[in-house]
Image (cartoon, rainbow, N blue to C red):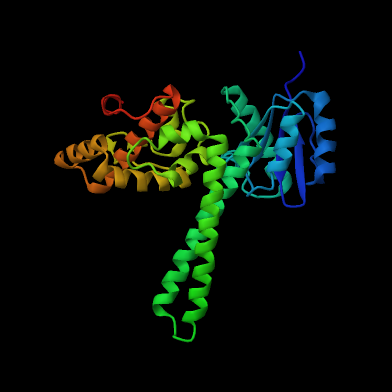
Length: 316
């Protein structure tokens, strides 16, 4: 019986390094359409069990899509996971060759544990993600200019105001594009999500773009994926505080705002928040618990395709 083949690929801007099972040496190809096609031709006869890449700010995206289109089982993972694995294997140095080999070993471990690759986003999903990310960038730029305006010299203020007006115009245009895209491709699910008091168009579009698993996982899986599942800090007789960690920070940011609004205007979250405060929980802890509950409710709504109802939300 032949040994299963695993592939690790370390992706850079212009090239990528490839390590495969049974090969001591790695090889490098150009990170372009020709290099992607060549790699697909090389890997197809090997029928690898898993091809593993780490997210590198988008440089890996076209390669992952090309490999997936060629029928190969591809997974893109968080770089922190790959680096932690390399360190635990004693690989303290960091080069493209070492990283590719570490990813190959990590691929074998993940496959042995029954890892299921996350489905790669289609073109519609990538368009929505690009719009959501750009909106967040524009908001950050606008906040920065507002902060500068407060302390700016009178001579500099007209320039700052012009920049702010331009950013506001861009934001308005982008919000229109987001609305059109959501209505064209995700209208039904967006309507279900925004039926929850506290969840507005920005929260809904962020969830649609950056949490496509919503409605497809159980409550424990979805909260762990987002980073809202408290992690134990216990050892021996020590019982430490539990904290949330990791996950998708951008999703948590919009859930924070939605939960904050929900504690004032959503009857279920408002009552839940009040119970936690009455039990002596700190406000921040209570708010994070509301974020957790809100995510579980939204996941149930997306799974059942049923709009918000107070009695159902209370049961979640």
